[in-house]
Image 1 (cartoon, rainbow, N blue to C red):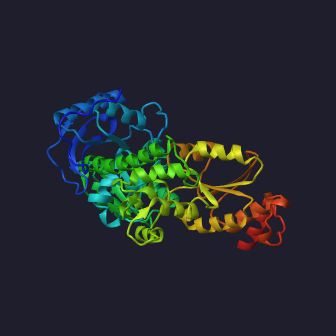
Image 2 (tube, one colour; image 1 turned 45 degrees about the vertical axis):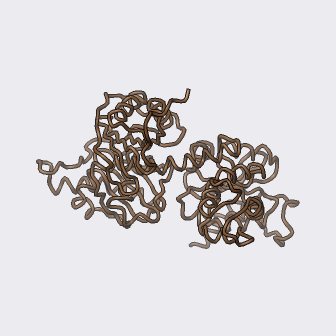
Length: 495
Protein backbone atom coordinates (compact mmCIF):
# COMPACT_ATOMS: atom_id res chain seq x y z
CA UNK A 1 0.00 0.00 0.00
CA UNK A 2 1.16 3.52 -0.73
CA UNK A 3 1.95 5.28 2.57
CA UNK A 4 -0.02 8.33 3.52
CA UNK A 5 1.73 11.68 3.46
CA UNK A 6 1.95 13.21 6.96
CA UNK A 7 -0.81 15.65 7.76
CA UNK A 8 -0.19 19.35 7.66
CA UNK A 9 0.94 21.93 5.13
CA UNK A 10 3.91 21.10 2.93
CA UNK A 11 6.83 23.52 2.62
CA UNK A 12 7.51 25.11 -0.80
CA UNK A 13 9.24 22.82 -3.34
CA UNK A 14 12.58 24.63 -3.07
CA UNK A 15 12.76 23.80 0.63
CA UNK A 16 13.94 20.25 1.27
CA UNK A 17 15.30 18.26 4.18
CA UNK A 18 18.96 17.42 3.67
CA UNK A 19 20.10 14.28 5.47
CA UNK A 20 23.81 13.39 5.57
CA UNK A 21 24.97 10.03 6.94
CA UNK A 22 28.70 9.93 7.59
CA UNK A 23 30.97 7.02 6.69
CA UNK A 24 30.29 3.88 8.73
CA UNK A 25 26.93 5.42 9.73
CA UNK A 26 28.46 7.00 12.82
CA UNK A 27 26.35 10.15 12.64
CA UNK A 28 23.26 11.38 10.85
CA UNK A 29 22.80 15.13 10.48
CA UNK A 30 19.66 16.69 9.04
CA UNK A 31 18.31 20.19 8.45
CA UNK A 32 15.76 21.88 6.17
CA UNK A 33 17.57 23.81 3.42
CA UNK A 34 16.57 26.45 0.90
CA UNK A 35 17.95 24.73 -2.22
CA UNK A 36 18.20 28.05 -4.09
CA UNK A 37 20.60 29.68 -1.63
CA UNK A 38 21.96 26.87 0.52
CA UNK A 39 20.70 28.61 3.63
CA UNK A 40 19.23 26.64 6.51
CA UNK A 41 15.49 27.22 6.91
CA UNK A 42 15.58 26.33 10.60
CA UNK A 43 17.72 24.47 13.12
CA UNK A 44 18.44 20.85 12.33
CA UNK A 45 18.73 17.63 14.31
CA UNK A 46 21.08 14.67 14.56
CA UNK A 47 21.11 11.03 15.62
CA UNK A 48 23.30 7.95 15.35
CA UNK A 49 23.08 4.55 13.72
CA UNK A 50 24.34 1.25 15.01
CA UNK A 51 27.28 -0.47 13.33
CA UNK A 52 26.46 -2.47 10.18
CA UNK A 53 23.25 -0.51 9.68
CA UNK A 54 20.75 -1.74 7.10
CA UNK A 55 18.37 0.12 4.80
CA UNK A 56 15.62 -0.50 7.38
CA UNK A 57 17.78 1.16 10.05
CA UNK A 58 18.35 4.15 7.79
CA UNK A 59 14.63 4.44 7.10
CA UNK A 60 13.80 4.31 10.82
CA UNK A 61 16.39 6.99 11.60
CA UNK A 62 15.21 9.33 8.83
CA UNK A 63 11.60 8.87 9.94
CA UNK A 64 12.62 9.82 13.50
CA UNK A 65 14.39 12.96 12.24
CA UNK A 66 11.38 13.97 10.13
CA UNK A 67 9.11 13.56 13.14
CA UNK A 68 11.35 15.55 15.48
CA UNK A 69 11.64 18.36 12.90
CA UNK A 70 7.92 18.11 12.00
CA UNK A 71 9.01 17.83 8.38
CA UNK A 72 6.40 17.18 5.66
CA UNK A 73 8.28 18.07 2.48
CA UNK A 74 10.79 16.37 0.19
CA UNK A 75 13.90 14.63 1.49
CA UNK A 76 17.41 14.19 0.09
CA UNK A 77 19.49 11.47 1.75
CA UNK A 78 23.25 11.16 1.29
CA UNK A 79 25.21 8.13 2.49
CA UNK A 80 29.03 8.16 2.46
CA UNK A 81 30.59 4.91 1.27
CA UNK A 82 27.45 2.90 2.00
CA UNK A 83 25.45 2.64 -1.25
CA UNK A 84 25.84 1.14 -4.71
CA UNK A 85 27.38 3.27 -7.44
CA UNK A 86 24.94 2.42 -10.22
CA UNK A 87 21.16 2.80 -10.41
CA UNK A 88 19.46 -0.57 -10.09
CA UNK A 89 22.68 -2.34 -9.09
CA UNK A 90 22.41 -5.19 -6.58
CA UNK A 91 24.25 -4.32 -3.39
CA UNK A 92 27.34 -6.29 -2.45
CA UNK A 93 28.40 -7.11 1.09
CA UNK A 94 28.78 -3.99 3.21
CA UNK A 95 26.75 -1.75 0.89
CA UNK A 96 23.10 -0.88 0.38
CA UNK A 97 21.19 -0.57 -2.88
CA UNK A 98 20.22 3.01 -3.73
CA UNK A 99 16.79 1.81 -4.83
CA UNK A 100 16.26 -0.16 -1.64
CA UNK A 101 17.15 2.78 0.61
CA UNK A 102 14.92 5.07 -1.41
CA UNK A 103 11.95 2.69 -1.26
CA UNK A 104 12.27 2.04 2.45
CA UNK A 105 12.71 5.67 3.47
CA UNK A 106 9.68 6.57 1.34
CA UNK A 107 7.66 3.75 2.92
CA UNK A 108 8.64 4.86 6.42
CA UNK A 109 8.03 8.59 5.94
CA UNK A 110 5.43 8.84 3.16
CA UNK A 111 7.60 11.57 1.58
CA UNK A 112 9.32 11.96 -1.79
CA UNK A 113 12.94 10.83 -1.36
CA UNK A 114 16.14 11.01 -3.41
CA UNK A 115 19.24 9.01 -2.42
CA UNK A 116 22.84 9.79 -3.37
CA UNK A 117 26.41 9.16 -2.29
CA UNK A 118 28.36 11.40 0.06
CA UNK A 119 30.71 12.57 -2.69
CA UNK A 120 27.80 13.37 -5.00
CA UNK A 121 26.12 15.52 -2.33
CA UNK A 122 29.24 17.30 -1.07
CA UNK A 123 30.50 18.02 -4.59
CA UNK A 124 27.16 19.46 -5.66
CA UNK A 125 27.09 21.72 -2.61
CA UNK A 126 30.60 23.03 -3.31
CA UNK A 127 29.73 23.80 -6.95
CA UNK A 128 26.51 25.57 -6.04
CA UNK A 129 27.33 27.28 -2.76
CA UNK A 130 31.02 26.80 -1.93
CA UNK A 131 34.55 26.82 -3.28
CA UNK A 132 33.57 25.47 -6.71
CA UNK A 133 31.12 28.23 -7.68
CA UNK A 134 33.59 29.98 -9.97
CA UNK A 135 34.59 26.76 -11.79
CA UNK A 136 31.14 25.15 -12.00
CA UNK A 137 30.78 25.36 -15.80
CA UNK A 138 32.03 22.56 -18.01
CA UNK A 139 33.14 19.18 -16.71
CA UNK A 140 34.06 19.38 -13.02
CA UNK A 141 35.29 16.55 -10.81
CA UNK A 142 34.93 16.50 -7.05
CA UNK A 143 37.40 14.49 -4.99
CA UNK A 144 36.53 13.96 -1.32
CA UNK A 145 39.76 12.83 0.28
CA UNK A 146 40.75 12.03 3.84
CA UNK A 147 41.02 8.53 5.22
CA UNK A 148 38.93 7.51 2.16
CA UNK A 149 38.90 8.73 -1.45
CA UNK A 150 35.54 9.26 -3.18
CA UNK A 151 34.71 11.02 -6.45
CA UNK A 152 31.79 12.50 -8.35
CA UNK A 153 31.43 14.29 -11.69
CA UNK A 154 29.28 17.20 -12.91
CA UNK A 155 28.61 18.44 -16.43
CA UNK A 156 27.64 22.13 -16.37
CA UNK A 157 26.30 21.74 -12.85
CA UNK A 158 24.31 18.57 -13.54
CA UNK A 159 25.32 15.37 -11.77
CA UNK A 160 26.78 12.71 -14.09
CA UNK A 161 24.88 9.56 -13.17
CA UNK A 162 26.50 6.15 -12.83
CA UNK A 163 30.00 7.67 -12.85
CA UNK A 164 32.75 5.03 -12.72
CA UNK A 165 35.46 7.19 -11.17
CA UNK A 166 35.23 5.23 -7.93
CA UNK A 167 36.82 2.26 -9.71
CA UNK A 168 39.97 4.30 -10.27
CA UNK A 169 40.35 4.94 -6.54
CA UNK A 170 39.27 1.49 -5.32
CA UNK A 171 42.88 0.70 -4.45
CA UNK A 172 43.26 3.81 -2.24
CA UNK A 173 43.37 1.72 0.95
CA UNK A 174 45.23 -1.27 -0.51
CA UNK A 175 48.72 -2.17 0.61
CA UNK A 176 50.77 -1.58 3.71
CA UNK A 177 52.54 1.49 5.10
CA UNK A 178 50.26 3.92 3.29
CA UNK A 179 50.90 7.56 4.12
CA UNK A 180 48.02 8.71 6.39
CA UNK A 181 46.70 12.24 6.45
CA UNK A 182 48.57 14.13 9.19
CA UNK A 183 46.62 15.53 12.13
CA UNK A 184 47.21 19.27 12.50
CA UNK A 185 48.84 20.18 15.80
CA UNK A 186 50.05 16.65 16.56
CA UNK A 187 53.39 14.90 16.19
CA UNK A 188 52.35 13.76 12.69
CA UNK A 189 52.06 17.39 11.51
CA UNK A 190 55.41 17.54 9.69
CA UNK A 191 56.46 18.65 6.22
CA UNK A 192 57.67 15.13 5.47
CA UNK A 193 54.32 13.62 6.42
CA UNK A 194 52.37 16.15 4.34
CA UNK A 195 54.65 15.55 1.34
CA UNK A 196 54.08 11.79 1.57
CA UNK A 197 50.30 12.16 1.85
CA UNK A 198 50.16 14.72 -0.98
CA UNK A 199 52.12 12.34 -3.21
CA UNK A 200 49.55 9.63 -2.46
CA UNK A 201 46.69 11.98 -3.38
CA UNK A 202 48.53 13.21 -6.47
CA UNK A 203 48.89 9.69 -7.87
CA UNK A 204 45.13 9.17 -7.99
CA UNK A 205 44.28 12.66 -9.19
CA UNK A 206 46.69 12.22 -12.10
CA UNK A 207 44.98 8.97 -13.06
CA UNK A 208 41.51 10.55 -12.83
CA UNK A 209 42.70 13.56 -14.83
CA UNK A 210 44.09 11.36 -17.61
CA UNK A 211 40.90 9.28 -17.81
CA UNK A 212 38.25 12.02 -17.64
CA UNK A 213 40.05 15.31 -18.58
CA UNK A 214 37.91 17.60 -16.40
CA UNK A 215 37.97 21.39 -16.75
CA UNK A 216 38.47 21.75 -13.00
CA UNK A 217 38.80 19.67 -9.85
CA UNK A 218 37.37 20.57 -6.44
CA UNK A 219 39.18 19.00 -3.50
CA UNK A 220 37.01 18.29 -0.48
CA UNK A 221 37.17 16.34 2.76
CA UNK A 222 40.10 16.69 5.14
CA UNK A 223 42.48 17.16 2.20
CA UNK A 224 40.46 20.16 1.07
CA UNK A 225 40.58 21.62 4.55
CA UNK A 226 44.38 21.29 4.43
CA UNK A 227 44.61 22.76 0.92
CA UNK A 228 47.64 24.90 1.79
CA UNK A 229 49.56 21.68 2.51
CA UNK A 230 48.23 19.65 -0.43
CA UNK A 231 47.63 21.89 -3.47
CA UNK A 232 51.21 23.21 -3.90
CA UNK A 233 52.44 19.61 -4.06
CA UNK A 234 50.01 18.39 -6.77
CA UNK A 235 51.45 17.96 -10.27
CA UNK A 236 48.26 17.72 -12.36
CA UNK A 237 47.65 20.25 -15.15
CA UNK A 238 43.99 20.74 -14.28
CA UNK A 239 43.12 23.61 -11.95
CA UNK A 240 42.37 22.33 -8.43
CA UNK A 241 40.42 24.46 -5.96
CA UNK A 242 39.61 23.62 -2.34
CA UNK A 243 36.11 23.11 -1.01
CA UNK A 244 35.07 25.67 1.58
CA UNK A 245 31.87 24.36 3.16
CA UNK A 246 33.37 21.84 5.56
CA UNK A 247 31.02 19.52 7.43
CA UNK A 248 27.83 21.33 6.30
CA UNK A 249 28.47 20.38 2.64
CA UNK A 250 26.84 16.97 3.13
CA UNK A 251 23.53 18.34 4.42
CA UNK A 252 23.35 21.24 1.94
CA UNK A 253 24.32 19.00 -0.96
CA UNK A 254 21.85 16.26 -0.02
CA UNK A 255 19.13 18.91 -0.14
CA UNK A 256 20.16 20.76 -3.32
CA UNK A 257 21.02 17.65 -5.34
CA UNK A 258 17.88 16.00 -3.97
CA UNK A 259 15.79 18.73 -5.64
CA UNK A 260 17.55 18.15 -8.98
CA UNK A 261 17.12 14.37 -8.81
CA UNK A 262 13.48 14.54 -7.72
CA UNK A 263 12.60 17.04 -10.45
CA UNK A 264 14.15 14.80 -13.11
CA UNK A 265 12.38 11.76 -11.68
CA UNK A 266 9.02 13.55 -11.74
CA UNK A 267 9.50 14.52 -15.38
CA UNK A 268 10.45 10.98 -16.40
CA UNK A 269 7.45 9.61 -14.54
CA UNK A 270 5.18 11.98 -16.45
CA UNK A 271 6.57 10.79 -19.77
CA UNK A 272 6.46 7.11 -18.87
CA UNK A 273 2.89 7.36 -17.66
CA UNK A 274 1.93 9.20 -20.82
CA UNK A 275 3.44 6.69 -23.24
CA UNK A 276 2.50 3.65 -21.18
CA UNK A 277 6.06 2.38 -20.69
CA UNK A 278 7.86 2.02 -17.38
CA UNK A 279 11.28 1.74 -19.01
CA UNK A 280 13.03 4.09 -21.42
CA UNK A 281 12.10 4.47 -25.07
CA UNK A 282 14.00 6.12 -27.91
CA UNK A 283 12.56 9.41 -29.21
CA UNK A 284 12.29 8.07 -32.77
CA UNK A 285 9.98 5.21 -31.79
CA UNK A 286 7.13 7.29 -30.35
CA UNK A 287 3.76 7.02 -32.05
CA UNK A 288 1.40 9.96 -32.70
CA UNK A 289 -0.79 8.76 -29.84
CA UNK A 290 2.18 8.69 -27.43
CA UNK A 291 3.30 12.13 -28.59
CA UNK A 292 -0.21 13.47 -27.99
CA UNK A 293 -0.25 12.06 -24.46
CA UNK A 294 3.12 13.62 -23.64
CA UNK A 295 2.00 16.93 -25.14
CA UNK A 296 -1.11 16.86 -22.94
CA UNK A 297 0.97 16.12 -19.82
CA UNK A 298 3.09 19.22 -20.32
CA UNK A 299 0.20 21.43 -21.40
CA UNK A 300 -0.35 22.51 -17.81
CA UNK A 301 -2.95 25.12 -18.73
CA UNK A 302 -4.99 22.56 -20.67
CA UNK A 303 -5.58 24.95 -23.58
CA UNK A 304 -4.05 22.67 -26.25
CA UNK A 305 -1.04 24.96 -26.64
CA UNK A 306 2.53 24.87 -25.30
CA UNK A 307 4.18 28.03 -24.07
CA UNK A 308 7.97 28.28 -24.25
CA UNK A 309 8.66 26.79 -20.80
CA UNK A 310 6.24 23.92 -21.44
CA UNK A 311 7.79 23.29 -24.86
CA UNK A 312 11.29 23.11 -23.39
CA UNK A 313 10.19 20.68 -20.66
CA UNK A 314 8.35 18.36 -23.06
CA UNK A 315 11.13 18.25 -25.65
CA UNK A 316 13.84 17.71 -23.03
CA UNK A 317 11.84 14.99 -21.28
CA UNK A 318 11.69 12.99 -24.50
CA UNK A 319 15.46 13.01 -24.86
CA UNK A 320 15.86 15.68 -27.56
CA UNK A 321 18.30 18.46 -26.73
CA UNK A 322 17.40 21.97 -27.87
CA UNK A 323 20.22 24.35 -26.98
CA UNK A 324 18.27 27.41 -28.16
CA UNK A 325 14.74 27.06 -26.79
CA UNK A 326 13.60 30.41 -28.19
CA UNK A 327 14.96 29.41 -31.59
CA UNK A 328 13.06 26.13 -31.32
CA UNK A 329 9.88 28.04 -30.48
CA UNK A 330 10.35 30.27 -33.52
CA UNK A 331 10.91 27.23 -35.73
CA UNK A 332 7.79 25.40 -34.52
CA UNK A 333 5.46 28.40 -34.23
CA UNK A 334 4.38 28.47 -37.88
CA UNK A 335 1.58 30.99 -37.33
CA UNK A 336 3.72 33.30 -35.14
CA UNK A 337 1.27 33.48 -32.24
CA UNK A 338 3.84 32.81 -29.51
CA UNK A 339 2.63 29.31 -28.65
CA UNK A 340 2.86 25.87 -30.27
CA UNK A 341 -0.09 23.63 -31.09
CA UNK A 342 0.14 19.85 -31.11
CA UNK A 343 0.02 19.74 -34.90
CA UNK A 344 2.93 22.17 -35.13
CA UNK A 345 4.90 20.12 -32.62
CA UNK A 346 4.03 16.76 -34.20
CA UNK A 347 4.94 18.01 -37.67
CA UNK A 348 8.34 19.24 -36.45
CA UNK A 349 8.93 16.01 -34.52
CA UNK A 350 8.23 13.80 -37.53
CA UNK A 351 10.45 15.93 -39.75
CA UNK A 352 13.41 16.43 -37.44
CA UNK A 353 13.38 13.59 -34.89
CA UNK A 354 11.46 10.62 -36.22
CA UNK A 355 13.48 10.44 -39.43
CA UNK A 356 16.91 10.64 -37.82
CA UNK A 357 19.32 8.25 -39.51
CA UNK A 358 20.82 7.49 -36.08
CA UNK A 359 18.59 5.98 -33.39
CA UNK A 360 19.37 6.82 -29.78
CA UNK A 361 18.41 3.96 -27.46
CA UNK A 362 18.00 4.28 -23.70
CA UNK A 363 17.85 0.72 -22.38
CA UNK A 364 19.41 -2.72 -22.70
CA UNK A 365 15.97 -4.00 -23.69
CA UNK A 366 15.84 -1.65 -26.69
CA UNK A 367 19.28 -2.89 -27.82
CA UNK A 368 18.11 -6.50 -27.67
CA UNK A 369 15.02 -5.57 -29.70
CA UNK A 370 17.22 -3.99 -32.39
CA UNK A 371 19.36 -7.13 -32.55
CA UNK A 372 16.30 -9.34 -32.90
CA UNK A 373 14.49 -7.27 -35.53
CA UNK A 374 17.37 -6.37 -37.84
CA UNK A 375 18.34 -9.95 -38.73
CA UNK A 376 21.33 -10.02 -41.07
CA UNK A 377 21.36 -6.26 -41.61
CA UNK A 378 24.65 -4.67 -40.54
CA UNK A 379 24.29 -2.69 -37.29
CA UNK A 380 26.74 0.04 -36.27
CA UNK A 381 26.60 0.86 -32.56
CA UNK A 382 28.37 3.82 -30.95
CA UNK A 383 28.72 3.76 -27.16
CA UNK A 384 29.61 6.99 -25.38
CA UNK A 385 29.20 8.71 -22.04
CA UNK A 386 27.14 11.84 -21.50
CA UNK A 387 30.27 13.73 -20.39
CA UNK A 388 32.61 12.41 -23.13
CA UNK A 389 33.95 15.33 -25.18
CA UNK A 390 35.27 13.24 -28.12
CA UNK A 391 31.84 11.57 -28.29
CA UNK A 392 30.10 14.94 -28.57
CA UNK A 393 32.63 16.19 -31.13
CA UNK A 394 32.11 13.09 -33.30
CA UNK A 395 28.30 13.31 -33.33
CA UNK A 396 28.03 15.36 -36.52
CA UNK A 397 30.48 13.10 -38.35
CA UNK A 398 28.68 9.95 -37.16
CA UNK A 399 25.36 11.32 -38.42
CA UNK A 400 26.95 12.20 -41.76
CA UNK A 401 28.34 8.66 -42.17
CA UNK A 402 24.90 7.26 -41.28
CA UNK A 403 23.30 9.31 -44.06
CA UNK A 404 25.84 7.95 -46.56
CA UNK A 405 25.14 4.31 -45.68
CA UNK A 406 21.34 3.83 -45.53
CA UNK A 407 21.67 0.03 -45.68
CA UNK A 408 23.31 0.07 -42.22
CA UNK A 409 21.31 0.53 -38.99
CA UNK A 410 23.11 3.18 -36.90
CA UNK A 411 22.54 3.21 -33.12
CA UNK A 412 23.92 5.32 -30.27
CA UNK A 413 23.70 4.78 -26.53
CA UNK A 414 25.13 6.57 -23.49
CA UNK A 415 26.69 4.00 -21.17
CA UNK A 416 25.93 6.03 -18.04
CA UNK A 417 22.43 7.27 -18.90
CA UNK A 418 20.71 4.88 -16.49
CA UNK A 419 21.21 1.55 -14.74
CA UNK A 420 20.13 -0.43 -17.79
CA UNK A 421 22.53 1.25 -20.22
CA UNK A 422 25.31 1.01 -17.64
CA UNK A 423 24.87 -2.76 -17.49
CA UNK A 424 24.74 -2.90 -21.31
CA UNK A 425 27.97 -0.95 -21.73
CA UNK A 426 29.94 -2.30 -18.79
CA UNK A 427 28.83 -5.93 -18.56
CA UNK A 428 27.44 -6.95 -21.93
CA UNK A 429 29.68 -4.95 -24.26
CA UNK A 430 32.73 -4.57 -22.00
CA UNK A 431 33.29 -0.89 -22.80
CA UNK A 432 36.58 0.43 -21.40
CA UNK A 433 36.84 3.80 -23.16
CA UNK A 434 34.63 5.98 -25.34
CA UNK A 435 33.58 6.48 -27.98
CA UNK A 436 33.54 2.75 -28.76
CA UNK A 437 32.21 1.43 -32.07
CA UNK A 438 30.77 -2.03 -32.74
CA UNK A 439 29.51 -3.74 -35.88
CA UNK A 440 27.01 -6.58 -35.54
CA UNK A 441 25.41 -8.91 -38.07
CA UNK A 442 23.01 -11.74 -37.22
CA UNK A 443 23.43 -10.79 -33.54
CA UNK A 444 27.16 -11.52 -33.77
CA UNK A 445 29.89 -8.94 -33.15
CA UNK A 446 32.09 -8.68 -36.24
CA UNK A 447 34.11 -5.58 -35.41
CA UNK A 448 35.13 -3.35 -32.51
CA UNK A 449 37.36 -0.33 -32.05
CA UNK A 450 37.52 2.68 -29.76
CA UNK A 451 38.41 6.28 -30.56
CA UNK A 452 36.76 9.00 -32.62
CA UNK A 453 38.55 8.18 -35.87
CA UNK A 454 36.42 8.63 -38.99
CA UNK A 455 38.70 6.70 -41.35
CA UNK A 456 38.79 3.69 -39.08
CA UNK A 457 34.98 3.55 -38.93
CA UNK A 458 34.70 3.91 -42.70
CA UNK A 459 37.25 1.13 -43.24
CA UNK A 460 35.29 -1.14 -40.90
CA UNK A 461 32.03 -0.49 -42.76
CA UNK A 462 33.73 -1.11 -46.11
CA UNK A 463 35.19 -4.37 -44.81
CA UNK A 464 31.87 -5.76 -43.58
CA UNK A 465 29.33 -4.49 -46.11
CA UNK A 466 28.28 -6.94 -48.82
CA UNK A 467 28.52 -5.82 -52.42
CA UNK A 468 24.74 -5.47 -52.71
CA UNK A 469 24.74 -3.24 -49.59
CA UNK A 470 27.25 -0.72 -50.90
CA UNK A 471 25.25 2.45 -51.72
CA UNK A 472 25.60 3.79 -55.25
CA UNK A 473 25.63 7.33 -53.85
CA UNK A 474 28.93 6.53 -52.05
CA UNK A 475 30.73 6.20 -55.37
CA UNK A 476 33.27 3.57 -56.32
CA UNK A 477 34.05 1.20 -53.49
CA UNK A 478 37.62 1.53 -52.17
CA UNK A 479 39.82 -1.55 -51.66
CA UNK A 480 39.03 -3.50 -48.51
CA UNK A 481 41.73 -3.35 -45.85
CA UNK A 482 42.10 -6.05 -43.24
CA UNK A 483 42.55 -4.84 -39.68
CA UNK A 484 46.22 -5.85 -39.86
CA UNK A 485 46.74 -3.89 -43.08
CA UNK A 486 44.98 -0.90 -41.60
CA UNK A 487 47.14 -1.02 -38.45
CA UNK A 488 50.32 -1.31 -40.54
CA UNK A 489 49.28 1.62 -42.70
CA UNK A 490 48.53 3.74 -39.63
CA UNK A 491 51.91 2.85 -38.09
CA UNK A 492 53.70 3.84 -41.29
CA UNK A 493 51.81 7.14 -41.42
CA UNK A 494 52.65 8.10 -37.84
CA UNK A 495 56.27 6.91 -37.97
